[in-house]
Image 1: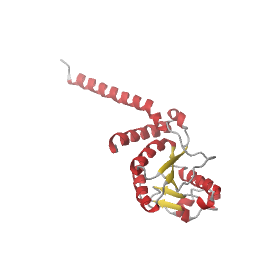
Image 2: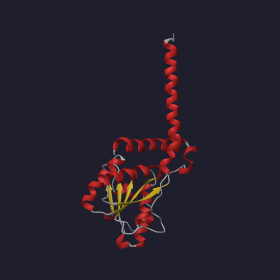
Image 3: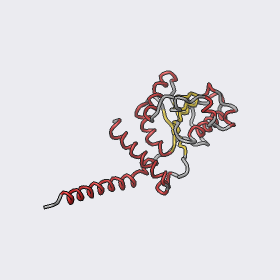
Image 4: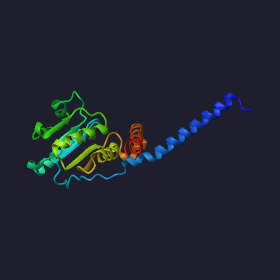
Length: 209
């Protein structure tokens, strides 16, 4: 007859085995979040873009978005898209934005060229707040900007919530200090990639059909 201690040990070992199995499956599958292709090329900008939508929350995103806006501006100053910064934080303002943008951009960009959305705190809220804004803005075409590890989930969420109301191109920001193809060699890369993979999986499976 098995003792309670032995039974507990077997249950614990089984639980550990299941957890290790889940971790190994996730670790080998997590790289799927990087399997997409951006549709925006810097030497061939898309036409008729109404807004550049950047998801705040990670270093470098706003600066990269402002640089992309500048490229559109230089190509056609009269048709430069609006720069929409999503999820800036409730205490954010123009001064906070300016501190993250290069001087070359600041020489030409004006407050009227930028929309600072400060209420959303999650990716889904980013999309929902934009959806509300589109009722007024009437945009047909946007460029979505976020970190490369965040793009696949973000695009899925935005497409799910916005539906066919707007065309979405994508432009990813490369995070530091790791590269997407080497994420498994860096502790931060592993942490971010696994976390993002589970969030993407949960949203696809449970949150939205």
